[in-house]
Image (tube, rainbow, N blue to C red):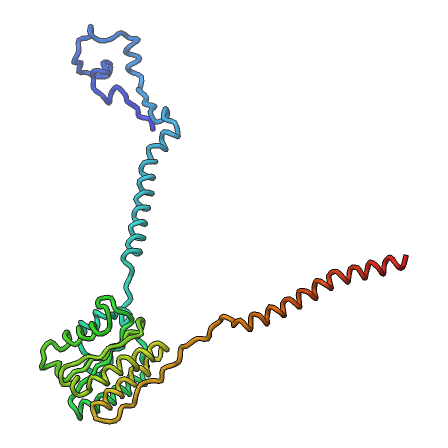
Length: 295
């Protein structure tokens, strides 16, 4: 870009010929040679003198800052997604704390947080426990959770649920809580005084030690819950105890061989090795003898 600076653009001082109003005495004016030099237009060649690399250097900081700004923005978004992932909505957010905060179920007797019970089991439980409540005025809630992080075992968590759902003794007097922890393969039964008295300590201990853990170990969660419900209801009604599941004999056979079996195998091995050695020596000698006899 060129800038033309003519004498007229400054003031009459630099153009004494054309200006009718002279502010300086003629004797003080420069000589003609100098005046001619002043009358010539002054050309600014700053644009021409700057090389192409110098021009690009002015645009480099802006471009570099733009790339850095975009990189920092992408890094911030990546960190936000990694450390603050989008949480799914719905039942997937449920946990042991949600069970405590949501309170007892209103339309059923089951809180299946672990998601291991099918519709048939839930329907059978609702029919069985509704009939029990209508006849004996005892309410039993069944809870399944995947794992426990706030309490050491299922018994502490069951007591916590009972206290949170039914804060007063009057509210929790006839209430029972059955908890099944699927990851730990254990369960617990607790309740108010009226519920404990109606069931009895023997059936409570048998349900906790037989029905819930044995069937949960085989991942038969539906059978574990429903068989426990039937056993508790039978005890409340004064019926004979249906009993728990048959325990499997987990005794494993030893993989170690007896001394007699070891000696027998050793004799067979020696016989086989001896036969192979005889063949390895006899066959080559026989072939060599046949080859020599032909000659």
